[in-house]
Image 1 (cartoon, each protein chain N blue to C red):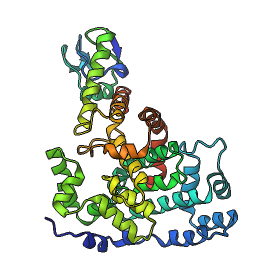
Image 2: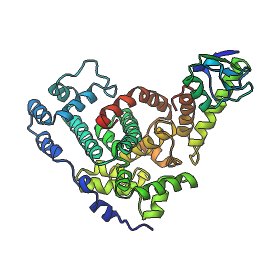
Image 3: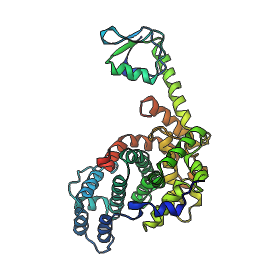
Length: 283
Length: 100
């Protein structure tokens, strides 16, 4: 068993241990119930890199908007404040990861995570979930714990991966044997430390066992299904054997299997642009 | 049968040697092409090669190769589950298109 504990990894997360100040400043304005479009646009505009990234997201195939979004106020209007807040949060967190990790590691993380985020969001749209962008963020962050393990102890992360590949086991099983917990639990715990809502921490913490989530089982099920589907479809590159689909989670999702091919083919158009937008300088 | 290098799939068998620019032999007759061969042929700028069999057999071989690659990813999955079956078909189709 390794010397790391859940708390030691959380305490040692360094710059990842809290959300960036730039996000906190924007969030204060966006979350104000009385904030109007102009104030929200102005708050986001205070971070030019974030503004540019949000405009590119708004214009990406993920939204399929018929008109080109040129201004932040237009994005607020077309996408909605709550949705834009989620995207801004996603972009801020990815920026933070990009600033703290090796470039290849960030790009590798984004490949599987962005695919999972888009797939989970598409499933949520088909279920007519009220906040599909939150599911997108949960998908993007579901392997955050893996990133933290890699940052803290690259040798252990590499050894876990090698063991999973050699023994034909899913990575989380190997992590469990080595650490006593897996990347899902660690990621969920970090998101709790960031004081983000349960609707984000639970789908991350329970993406291998959605039925164990207390309050956000559906979101956890959507992330679970998405993370597996993108691996099986070959969107994530080659890796260890994939977590088996939890058939109870599938039932919970209420998704018709017949919808999967359409979701998969939408991914072909949406994935590469979104990775490029999120990775920014890291790509 | 002459096939453009873009249409080649791993598993095709060369009916004539693949000759690169300057007469260099890149693969002898009878070679069963792998993904690595295809990269080499493209890298040398070959546009087409002579392969054994007809198109139906080629398609069949490509399908079997794609199924094999996809099946490796599906190890441990509940393969009788309707969603997993749909995903497998989609994964094979992506593999055939070169997207996997």
